[in-house]
Image (cartoon, rainbow, N blue to C red):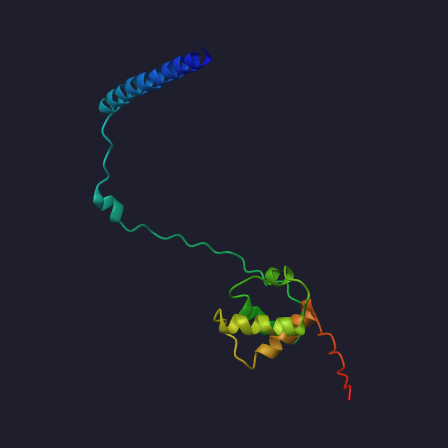
Length: 142
């Protein structure tokens, strides 16, 4: 008996969905037929050249600490990312900064020559880095 009730309810719901779909479809078709046609824009108006507006923005020198390599960093590294990008990094040791600078030059095409890399690394270590930990002494067990 319970199954029969469930089937009857499902049948009525299905019948309601079909009736709504048919009624709704005919209502939508009738409303679009009476709508005013869209106004067309002449192609001449679309292809006219409009004057370009100039906008001048103030230039703010990035807040970088002074030191050897400052100008190189400000001109070569800030081309692609802001100085804040460096501050978002952990305090890297010298070896990691050297790897990062080399990767920027080789993998990403940063305009840095191989002889400029050590100068940039020195600047980054002085600003947001630390010296490498001393190597552990090797022990000869002969």
